[in-house]
Image (tube, rainbow, N blue to C red; front, side, top):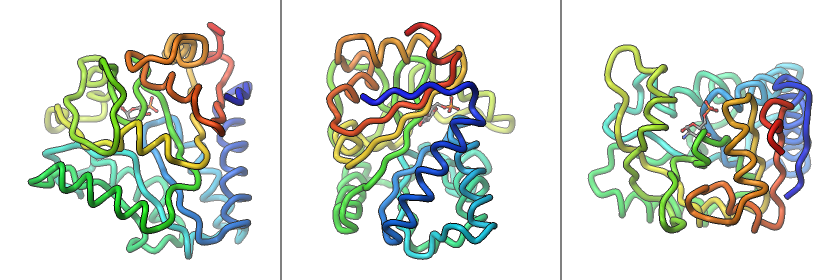
Length: 240
Ligand code: GLP
C-alpha cells in the first residue's frame, strides 16, 4: 500500500483529481470505477473545474460505479445514479451510454451481477477504481463478514451503515439492501485509490492498514493489491 497523508480534504481532492485528469489525458478511452459518498466530492469538484477549463475530456471515457441501493427508483434524489449525475456526469462531457451502473431494482440479482461483470470485462476491465471507506471498514457495500465476496451481489446493509447514511434520506426510510461490486471485482482493478477523511474513519483506517487481512475489515484486503494508493487527511490518519 502506498499511503499519502495530506492536511485536509481539499488538498486530497486536488491531488486525486489531478491524478485522474493526467490519467484520462494519457488514455482518453480509459475505464474508470467511481464511488459515491461525501468523500470523493472534492475530487469530483476538481475534475469538473479542469473540464470547464478545457484541460480534460470524458468524451471517450467509460465509467462503472461501485454500488446502488435496492428498492429505490434510479431517478430518486438519493439514488447513487442521481448522486453521480449531480456531482460529476452532468457537469462533464461523458456520454451517458458509457456510464455503467448496477440496477438495484433488478428482478434477478444474480443475472444482474453477471451482466455487470461481463460489461466491465468487455470494456477491458477497470483501469482505476476509486473507493471511500465506511466506519466499519466496508468498501462499496461489502460489509464486514466471515468471507470476502467475489463478484457483484445483493447485500443486507448493517446497522452502522444505515445509521451513517440515513441522514441523507428525509422523505422515505433508507433502503435496507443494496447491489454492490464484490471484493473480487474491486481487486481486479489495475489501480485502486482509496480516500478517507475525518476522525470518524480513523479506526477503520488503522484496521485497514495495520490490522490483519480479514473480511471483518473488508478494506484490509487492499494490503494484497499490487497498486493500492491510500489518500488520508491528518484526522483519518490520527491512529496510525
Ligand atoms: C457508502 C458507500 C461507500 C462509501 C461509504 C462512505 O456506504 N457505499 O462506497 O465509501 O458510504 O461514505 P462517505 O464518503 O459519505 O463517508
